[in-house]
Image 1 (cartoon, one colour):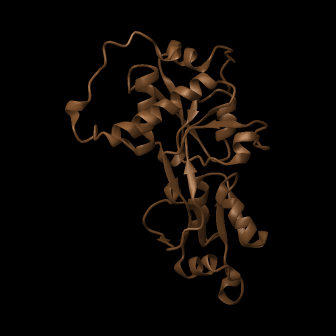
Image 2: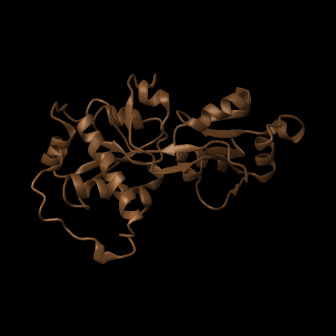
Image 3: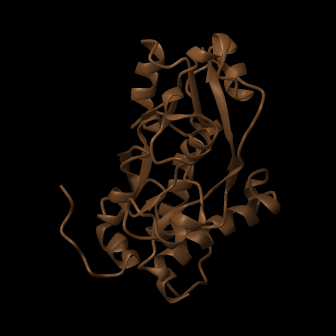
Length: 250
């Protein structure tokens, strides 16, 4: 169930609650120390003052927008592509969203049976390729590409990574089209060609500019820290004690 609606600004709500809620895809929930989990921890360390003050909210590609809009999560941190439609107004969500600067660029590839990967990559639909069957996540940018490249008979939409795995295992699909960061396991052959370039970013509700700005500043600070080699020289890192303003006042 959705939590009781709180009209207070998100930053205030999170600080009063004492932890931040980060939306993370189901197939990453058990990945301790993962890149995306560390992004969530970075936001928690700034907004709450403790990197361990976070709660992971499991989501799928199909549920992520409603989970964010319903305030079950404060932000989405995992492989969410910035598109103009999603920023202005995503029809399936009934709203637009605020995206940070991109923290990563990924892209769609095909994975699965090597023979049918070649069919998909070359858009072949005759001979042995007439048996091509592509699994692709609903409500995803790879679906937009696949739907433009193939008739509906050649692809099936799935609602989660788990469902995709099941359909690949039972032979419903022989190829999966997905972003590089979501390709599962190492048992499937991965094609050589990349077909899209996906700018991944933090996503927040577009009704709270203050919180969106703070989240974006965290990401910019991580970029700056990397540029200054802070990750390689721990002596350059330390708590700053002479700041008198809280984040909401900056």
